[in-house]
Image (cartoon, rainbow, N blue to C red; front, side):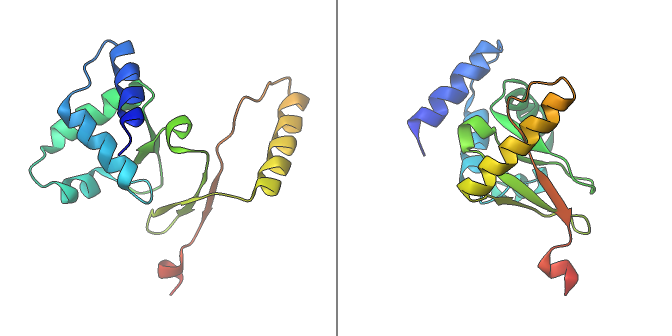
Length: 145
């Protein structure tokens, strides 16, 4: 676990007039260690001693401070991950049947083409593009089986 990660998280949380508590630190560690965005039930399975209401409240503080991002799918549980500027730029594959979210990093050449195309689309509509998020929605291997 990078001390830099916690330093960044602490600065953002304190900048939002909150404290970077041990619970918030623990949540940041869980999200940093996860291979994909995770749900609140996933977090509670990782540490059954956590209270669901505390997890909700602390995730809300971390999201408000820009430390984490919520990934919304069609099912009842949002997924959470580190904010892109902390965890790295990537896109999502979202299964519309089970709600699974997988992170995917596209090759640099594809990313450059995507940036160019999206910037052009934004400019045609009088919009200045700063960054993008891309969610590809479909059906995962497990649900297709």
